[in-house]
Image (cartoon, rainbow over all chains, first blue to last red; front, side, top):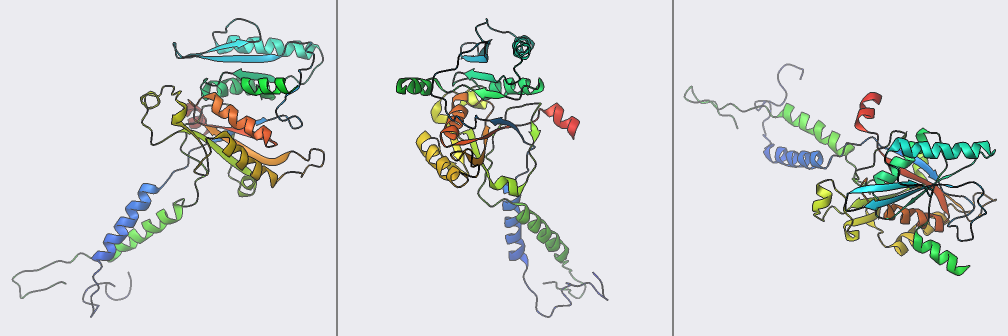
Length: 163
Length: 177
């Protein structure tokens, strides 16, 4: 380490210190911290602003002129898959088919001069979260930024019974 | 410790000092790197999404953000979940904030309301609205109902800034480095 001789050599020290115990403790501490060390995973986010002025909507729906873009999702436990429908159409088999229908509907809104058209995701509670995120992901890719979620069935019933 | 005899036998004593130095350095590294605070982020297998925005760490921004984790209970051994399948046993899932269990909707609602009250009324046009942001980090195979419940509870508490956690697919991660 420098100087004339090696620092720490036994011959330098008239009083020897037993470092074995310290080494043991440091080893233990090292193992503890190594085991508890946590590497950060790359994560991100998808913004989903809820309606600012409404909270949980409990009133009567507005008169709908254009068909609302509502993606229904239902979990088919027997076949381990999610059944997806757009509006009152039949089941869509692929992502492309689903997005084609959604884009077609958004074009109708654009033709009618409407710039704001939310995509409503209406899924049953047992649908895997990944499937919901997948729909959101596809909508974001198509620049459909306004994504809303339908309130749970029991909550909608409560709202209706109050009115 | 070392005894040098008169040529009969010789004990060599390894010099422990460099080893201790390195071990101290390692110890320091792990101690400083260890996260001993309350863990905000539970270990969750996040859903994959290509269009997710990278969530850069910003301590100022994170002050006004709460993370709700929805994950499969670690202590429960579930065959369906272990095989990468879909577990639909409600008792197996936990909704947690900063390591505490908020699976009961009333408890979650109470906590969110309390947190939201601190940032409520900053916008004079919408005094009932809170500026608090909530990030929902739900497991990819978690039932949508749990995330939906968390969102509804946020709406009831006047929180409208909701983000959902997602991770980038592996091939995308490689492309982006």
